[in-house]
Image (cartoon, rainbow, N blue to C red; front, top):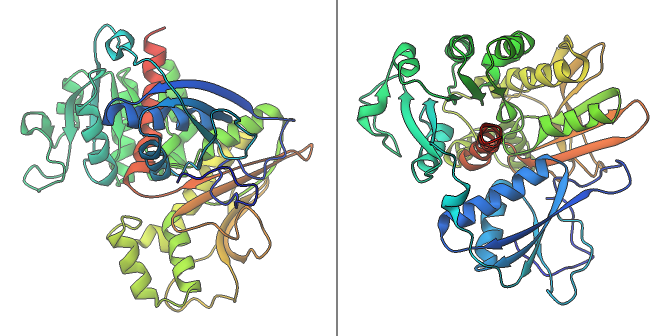
Amino acid sequence: MTAQINPTRQPSLNPLAGRRTPASDAVALIHLALTDDRSLRDAASEFYRQTRLGRRAVAVVSGPVEALASHCDLLGLATVTADPQAPALVHEPVVLIPGSVAARDVASVNPDRPIRVAIAGCGVVGGGLYLRLRQDPRFQVVGVLVRSTTRLRAPQPDPEIVTTTLNDVLATRPDVILDCLSDGEAGLALTHAALSAGVSVISANKQAIGPTLADLDDLAQANGAIFAYSAAVGGGAPVIETLLRARRHGPVARIEGVLNGTVNFLLNQLGGGAAFATALTDARRLGFAEEDPTADLSGLDAATKLTILSALAWDRPTPLATIETLSAQTALPAGPIRQIGRADAISGEVVFQPVEGDTLFADLPDEWNALRVICEDGTVFTCRGRGAGRWPTAESVWADLLDLLDRSSL
């Protein structure tokens, strides 16, 4: 979304809105020459990575600024286009300033050899990553793990690299495996085998890593591998990064968040008068819900994410006392309602709660997620962003992959 600077603009789509953190946010100054589709995607990715680090991005842009703003919107990043003669202070995480920038030689920033990547799962998220990886010379897709080789997919991966067995994937000698599976048991077996073999893993599979996060971290460290999992919580919202920044600031007292994009979309639709069945059909059509939404509706998805966050906040998962479910029979009060996952160091819960007047949660649109972290000294860290869908979740995996690429070039 692109707009001229407007002091009355709502901050509802600002991933950094509402933070009472140390005095000011760091700012990344970036120069961009937009020459093709890849440069647009890479620019939006760079903004997303800066947001994960708690920075605002101010970019001088040569090329189609509006197209870049549209790419940012797909990831849940609000942008504002500033007058190049008088850029004002704004609250959006990305400020675009039209200007003249020389094109960069992409080849000069490529590694000595491509990073060998295997993808586990080629559905909504895995398929999006496959498309992007095939177009980027910094990476080589060496294997794609699927359940069935005969199923038609969009995109359809190269048959020569498709397999149904984990051993075949490991035999391709990948540097990193992207776990985009929806099956927690299969994802855990994959992650354990890969890390044991010294192969790095980037996981979007919350069900796989939630119960054994500390053990998997230890396994990766013992075998010289990297284990990253930003996309497992929050999709495109920088939830894990926000929590880790808060913990670096000081001890965490409490966390609370909207952690399931499917349920948030349904609650918004139900609040607008839609029937439950209609809202669920729309969620599937838009890519916000799986064909089987049981994990979302039962609260298991949000509970697993809260378990991961509590383990990161207090070095151990917090037991959950209550997990409420959503169905066509659920009686919801009037006004904006959110599924809130909340925890401190003692206990946690996943409940439906009125949020009238809460500036972080009340106007949270569609499939968006949000997190609030309260430190013991009263400092508050927040973030928000798109919590479901192919591109936001794939972007979070991509950002972890670029972090790995940066480490490999050191």
